[in-house]
View 1: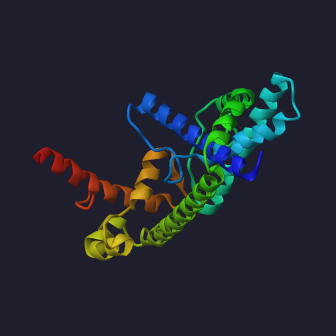
View 2: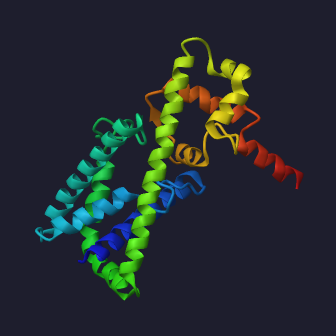
View 3: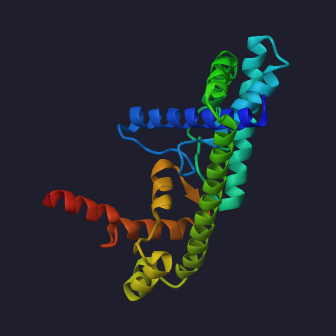
Length: 250
């Protein structure tokens, strides 16, 4: 494959992973939830996993071996991703601690089985995917455009959560003197303007989406996060309450 085909294959499988995660949310929660860490419709871990399956699949003909090796490779990737994200953002995005045969809550048996099956299936799926990519006019230009959009999304998300962690770290210290909610009563206006002067929100839209997408989200600044989240849900600044009020008046 050319570099452009690799980029488009990565994005295609990242998009399929995003669709899969959203389908799970529809079945389990009966609502649409953007499960991706990034803003766009893609889950990069699926894209990277698919490329790894394709690479190692070149050297493994036996589907049984491919199943176990593919499952193991994907679990290693998922574990490294979880560990790296926790180090970068001081938070854990998923937790399999209550699932059977898990390792530190980062990977579990069900994930291994699912990834193993995917590593075998992609051998039959990829020729079809590659055929579609090669049939797209100016696919090289599209690959460059999509790659730029993806990189900008990664930068934007990292910037947002670097600031989010800064807020949590600062207000974790407030808890040593008193409850954050009490602090808001005295300095709420100043705080909200500090967070987002234009929208007057405690959390940005991107951060709210992440918190809904990852119900098992855990941060190292848990006390500050819980207080901020409670204030967000109960205060007059909560966007959801305003939206519900507008719907009722219509």
